[in-house]
Image (tube, rainbow, N blue to C red; front, side, top):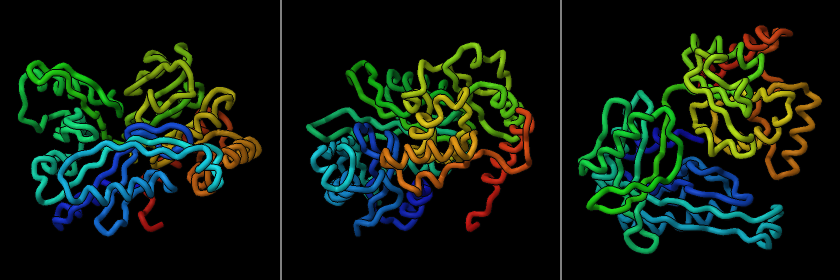
Amino acid sequence: MEDIYGAMKTFFNAELPFVLVTVLEKSGSAPREAGTKMIVKQDGSIVGTIGGGILEALSIRHALTCFDSDRCEIRSFSLSNKDASSIGMICGGDIKALFERFGPETLTRNAAVKSAIEMDDDFILVTDVTEVEPGIVDGTKVMISKKSILKNSTESVLDFFKTLQNTIDQAVFEIRSFESGMLGIRDYLIDPHRNQEHLCILGGGHVALEIAALSKGLGFYTTIVDDREDFANTTRFPNAEEVRVIKEYSNLLSEIYIHSNSYVVIVTRGHAFDKEVLAQMLRTNAKYIGMIGSRTKRDEIYAKLLNEGFTQADIDRVHCPIGLTIYAQTPAEIAVSIAAELILERRRPQND
């Protein structure tokens, strides 16, 4: 994903209006996951993407109608199986998206986002998406960091925000309902953003153990994910900030939050879940995606993904075999080669 918040800062400084489109839900072959964002400018051009194709075109068309109003809207768009097949897709899909107009007139809404843009730390943007009339939501925004909450609110809602603040490292993209006393039940979109570099190691085996031993010293916020409690626990990974035991690898993005400053290392046991995991990671805007494995195994997985509708551009994002070529053999040596590639990706010049 392009730097959405950097673009927003530019538009704010130039006092140019824009519409921010955020995917709330997706199903079927809709290409991008919940949390994906796109900016639509008044001339119809965009920054970022929610996956291209008809669903994106429909979203852009609707966004252009939002420039005439300050209202926040939620809209759903569908692509039938018949329509999908007519353009060469395997099946249809659906997305539900939030449309928010920003500009010189939307001062209250701008304040939380402007504050977030200046943050060096992790933060959560909270949007009140309680429906006030069909398709129209409240739209009030709150910025929560580990140090502050930018919001004037009733005490009952403030308690909810403080709870989010205390669990900011575990926050995931979701809509959560909250009973706020005199205001009744409110629906809040929780949208976490990590400015801190996040290393997500999928698999808790020997190589993962060695990578985690290095990552803390390199400054990564490290998360270990495995479906085996014996391999994913704080005793085994004392230096990891998070250790998560999942039921299965098929629905990872409901368990972990991958963002534009995430580095993903796929080292599942025996490569049994590599394809399933890689398919999900390619639907994120992760900065780095690496997968362990031989070239033969890699080519087999790539062929299957291409048959399922992924593009060559998607495949080109993947570092596989993972790590720099140092002829590593042991888990510790492999971890060094992977850590070196993470550093290379981190330090690589922008125009390289």
